Length: 541
Ligand code: ZN
Image 1 (cartoon, helix red, strand yellow):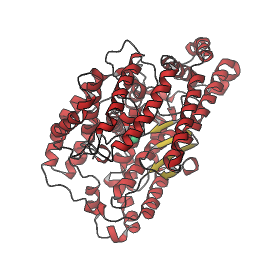
Image 2: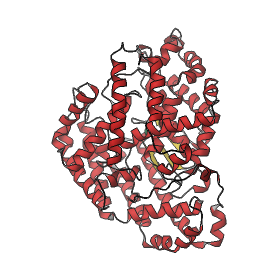
Image 3: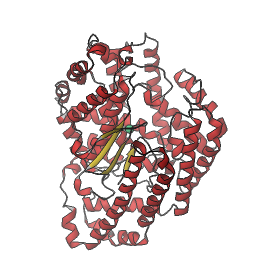
Image 4: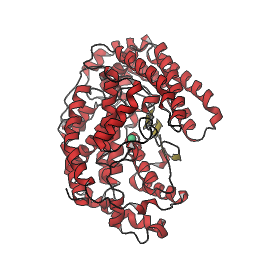
């Protein structure tokens, strides 16, 4: 169903359970009967799909309105657009929680039991039930109120951020915190109040597990960051000359086409905050932003959003119009954007092929800059204030600060009014740098001001960890991938990702998928190995 990545404006409701199933690798290779075959013998599965398809159409229409709002809509349209989106969301929600869908899911239990766990139909029934059981817990009135509040809160943030005035947004954030707790409490029985909120994006993950996973990661990252930042900083001035927008966009389109983004089923437009959005498997769009004095912005945000888009373009077309069509979790989704952005796009071999073309596009700016200088510049590590501009090594430290603050707010050990100070203190202790303004501090990310508090950030770090684990598995299965990337050929990698990950859509949970693809649970070692190997060559470690 309609998915927006980077801007997390939708509240995804999933059921909060402990359901974790282990799947063996070969499970993915088994062919299941097509959904069409079962429809003939089971009219109820057809009825379920018809209803879900109608809901999906309404959500897709809302997504088109959202895309238009973020790209071409004149500012005068904002108020009406907010209302139109809320109306469509309310219609789709009430259609989804219709007791008739609950009855269909009940009636389909025997069919589900008779089918293999990973068959398309069993997966559709299982996933729809999980979403249905979660959706009916949240009263429609609360959904509408929360949606309205988030719109108001976003507007307050949009004014507070440029004027560096946290107090403007503080009362909205206090209400967001109250409503986030209320939302979590519709899912009683949790171990930590953040668990149900984390579950919306990263089903099955728990605050306590993440806290200890992130603590391990931090312990290994901090000495690496210290070793790197005690050395002379890399000179990245070559990226900060004047690069005209038209040529930047032209080059980014060339890269997209070459890496396998299907323009017949997608397009790229400009926006303030880049995102990926899909209306169907046949229409998966991305947006980018261009800074003429920073070559890296457009280039890497384009490849990042393309990674999200390749995932959605690669979903099995039989899943169209059902909840199975889409990425399985925020962590797995982010693993694809980060894999393409960092493991491919910031790779030395990748630029062996593309750098001569970039030089030809910008001969005055890069004609005398060596490949090695450019490669080092795009991988510069530093203690910086802004998460979205952070390098691969320090990025997760930014995420952990937000994750911990979310938990403290939900637990009640931190008050919203003390949030700016707590934020600054963590930047001082974790990154050794102090934001001079709240604009560059607690006001920099949109997430808390347009979503809930809780579950908004863990997916970024999970994505980095999963990307390294998947990439290692890809290289193990196809060692020739490294060589091919140097020759400008990413087909083996792209096809492996399609077969192992993309085509399955939401059929498997993140935990099932990771085990199925890598034969292991989620681990931090592949990411640490990747960082040590790559940055050990760029710096002395
Ligand atoms: Zn992303």
